[in-house]
Length: 411
View 1 (cartoon, one colour):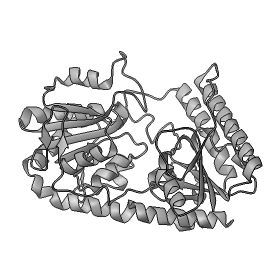
View 2 (cartoon, one colour; view 1 turned 180 degrees about the vertical axis):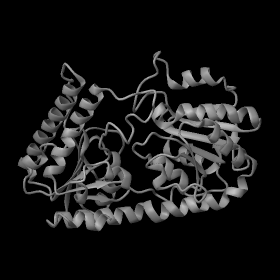
View 3 (cartoon, helix red, strand yellow; view 1 turned 60 degrees about the vertical axis):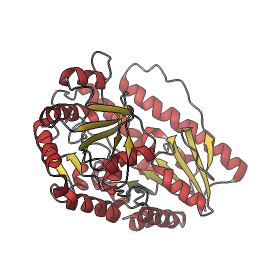
View 4 (tube, one colour; view 1 turned 90 degrees about the vertical axis):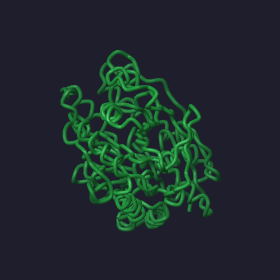
């Protein structure tokens, strides 16, 4: 089977699946703007970048970007097909316009769209923070950002979403063709290890006997609840003199807004909370193996987020047997049940978060049952081997020209 993956910044969500198909002998190609890691036997083709147009409005800029990216992808595919013929199936991300013209250049090739996030002016991330109201311009911009997705879903044979909440953001008329299957968490790599050690930048070594509270995000920003974590951490630090706080993540902004004065959110929150710098360790963006070790030694791991895309890191932490203290927001609640396999707190309630952390730090062994159940949850609902089997079966059925086959196999 010849499979073409398309992603703006590959491989993204297709990392495990592309490697799996290549390892079993399928011909796998990734078409992307840039690639950030070695992919073994996966062939990588770059379609190049283009300077942004000078659109007069954010709405126009969104449409222009999607159309021009879709055109670059279409030209690259056409060039590939002229050399070697069409692939058996195309798997691509529905966002950014990457798949916008795929069915025009490959009308007979079945295509699967990864449906990660459909923007809404209410009921999800936009308008979630009362301090950040949604404007008329925001509404126009969101509708423009969705145009490429709806056009793509109208043309392709099937879609895929990693969580039920993310799938249900899409308009009702498209949901029947969108299958549900998580990308997969490697529970053999992400596993409990009572002997794990994590070394801090100052040389101090943490293990399971130390009272440790952790936080991790791609970037330390409001969308991922970093301010709420910092406010709670300051309260816990004042009440628990032995607790250590470890924060993994960069100082950029992946989603949402920058701090108003141009500083990093880390600098802003350190100043606001006044937390003792010797009590909190910022370790930056960690190699994956080090991040897993951090999860293996933590007493409580905080994962807060706007109602938005669910991070792999939360499920990886659960798979290691970490106790996740999460925000009572979608789609966190799809995997974390309060008091059964983790704990939940209101997103805007750092006092409640601090109280929960204090309870865990006071009686860590009392939550061992929740830690074990957290791992079982990930094994049952997002284990990598199971996800790969379901995704592979769905793609094979799709390549066999059975459009409804993917959703049936992936569910």
